Length: 445
Image (cartoon, rainbow, N blue to C red; front, side, top):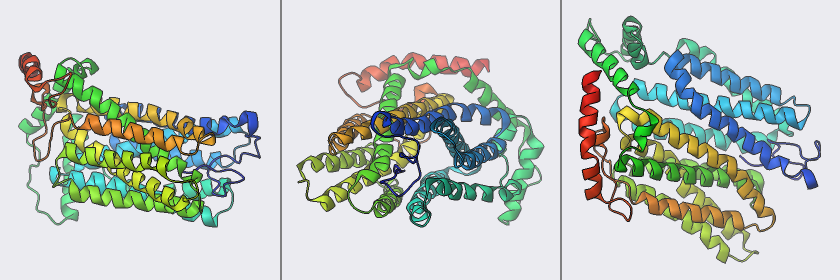
């Protein structure tokens, strides 16, 4: 989202002159943005644990309420400190309900529709909300009322408490079989699908409980114990950090582009929507590493070319920045699908959690990368472009998971491609002993 100040009429963030956030206090503007991402970091770390313990549904609605109420109180902030604290809490609530709803939907859908839900459901919803931001800001003068307007849609989720069910898979893991069957029966009746008298057999339920116990025997150390998993984890962390920094950096830097800020922000959102739809169309046709490499390399090249554009050619610079945003937006929505397929089931939640946490750390840093644009307007784009190209090079090393069954055990993870520090042959040999480890763990459960 763009920055907001007296000279920037979109007014979502601080009113710089009102709280004297200029000159020696100018550092407080990017710091307040970083605190939002600190809340996002905390939320991405604890939301999974909370939803595993208390259920997806209550955590989703509680964190949605936290985001909504915090935004309303934030609109009445009396000083910068109060604004920053509430900004952090709002970030915590926002990412928590986002991740929890993603888990809830993924667990309720079959394998063929999960990709559509991730790309078209979550990503398009995010893009549409982003596109509405400049429209709201154009008609609503003042960042306080804009925060109120942004919080109001949260109240629309109150009636959905009676519609959105708990995850049947989570209910089964907790031994609440009757409640899980009730959820499935309601969904079947809604879709007019016949339901058998017994939906979950005792053996299937016991197998699901066994899988849960099997997963609990693994730790975060298993993400780096074998050479193959270590390379996948390190590559994943770097790619997620890079994609997150470039994506949020280009989004936040929209206000620094020349021209109408409302139009620039709206075009940035439209570019995101185009990228999400294009990724959805290509994901079934292109190999996974090729698709990730292409989007990141395209982004990096577009941003680096901006150095060659004369200062008086503002339109060309804007077009290049938006094209770069389109590339990284495609990568941003795609990495959720790709790394879900890369990481084995027994460590998937932990692996995605580590990657997501690393991404939030880079998001905290990106406002300061944007801040160096005060001294050189092109420098942030050069930094983001270089990072994007580095991530593209790393993505080539990852194996293709298209049309493959999801790996369950660590030994089933596809080997990383041949490179200077990890050869496929040595990786396969180093992981041979992991077969016995996986089998023995399964036998003890």
